[in-house]
Length: 404
Image (cartoon, rainbow, N blue to C red; front, side):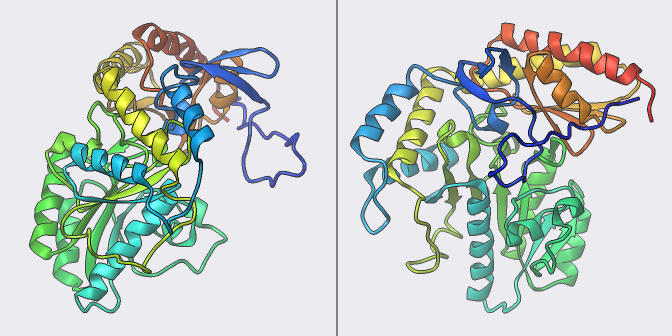
């Protein structure tokens, strides 16, 4: 029988029990490797869930952050923070957009995007603005972002949810066009360019291009959540750039700070002036330490050619995984875009989370049946092969076991 997902009693009785943790406590890391408090070593195929862009202990990042900690960690947004302008300028340069709001998490970035959409609608005289969102989407766990999320399991127990969302399937432009004909209150389309928690589900290039045309025709905002798929993970700075389009609003977080909490909302000309003083804010957002982490992350990514590395090593991983697993009964599909990889099985596979860790590999299981790989962008071809060599035998054994 397949083993159930690990149900681990927390060894931290005073920490609220909101995570199904594995019985592993990590101590330190170097590059794409981490060690636990017992001295066991693991190859990091998860990157802190797409956060540790530069891996662990990067020799260029660490001294820069040490220098910043000694200089200034936090002030507040009562005052100018010059590093905000430095990072915002770079984000606008690589995105082709115009203005940035800084916060601390992807959830906050998505909340800000939702507020921009609603204010955009109210400014046009729409008193009950509605936003098109997607099946299988995940935008966060606050009440508003939870309402935009398309996962009944994580919504359960938190009703009533926020109104004002219209849900459609991914990659179905006809569904959007039908909504445009029937609902005059729509003000924005909000989607992940590649759904992460939903199982590594990409929006097709032609679909994104169609959305861009439709949003222009309808005077809607196109809002692309790149919290997980942005910052070089697919081999371009942002996943939507493969489609040759620009959004009006783009939430970012995760990989932008290489582990230091950071979020951002990047806006184009139609949305950059929607919010003004007093409309939105955050205490920690844009503090000097987070801004320095973002500036250094993007600088190091450019210096070390990490976009090309993500594209090349990601293709290697996709090819090797497909060669070993693609034809197996029980493997439904392998979806990959750069270093964002999902292996969908025909059955729940939560048991592989602990088995992989016991074999020295850190992975994720999402959408119950999808093995997710999000390694640091510094991963080498040799380390990618090691991921394949550890993971594939585990998957083959798992698929050979009788189903319950």
